[in-house]
Amino acid sequence: MNRGSGLPIWVIPLAAGIGALVLVFAILMVMDARPQPVSGEVVSTGRADIGGPFTLVDQTGATVTEADFLGRPMLIYFGFTYCPDICPFSLQVMAAALDQLPEDERAEFQPILITVDPERDTPEQLALYVTSDAFPDNLTGLTGTPEQIAAAAAEYRVIYRRALEEGAPEDAYTMDHTSLIYLMDRQGEFHSVYAHGTPPDVLAEGLQDFLEENPG
Image (cartoon, rainbow, N blue to C red; front, side, top):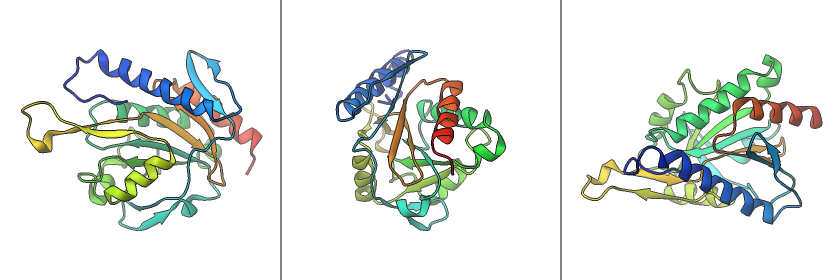
């Protein structure tokens, strides 16, 4: 889980890594699959009860559902734009992995950021955030009502909560949240999950393997 700025800096990646691994192994408990020992990171594949329908709003203000993304494999990350480190790092890993693919293969994937902070992450805020040169091209940002975000997070087994340092102003909160990259297939079904800290080359290899096994 992504820990707020109140913790020592060395705790942040440790807590995120432990939280991600706990969730990954929880996922594996409901799958007929085993973790693959790739560079110490967990990459799991198989059928799992992960993902499902959602109704959200993209950075242009348009209402979208999971059906709008069918036909393209999705790379989904739950985070928030005010995240100081974990979220931008994960999106940069996603970008670096996609950049290792040939242009035609890279264009097949739809990267998506679903906020866990709908109060601050308006469509306008997401529109500014997703266009960062450090993030994947064509990154789509999704927000919604708190109820819509909670429903989407539940479909992906994502845990999140508001965190506020004692004595800090109410609007200075951060968000603790699960930090995983989900690969969903062209039918919107779960394919793989990548733990926080997965190297870009490992993710890139997984994406190429996916395309070889699931040609468009």
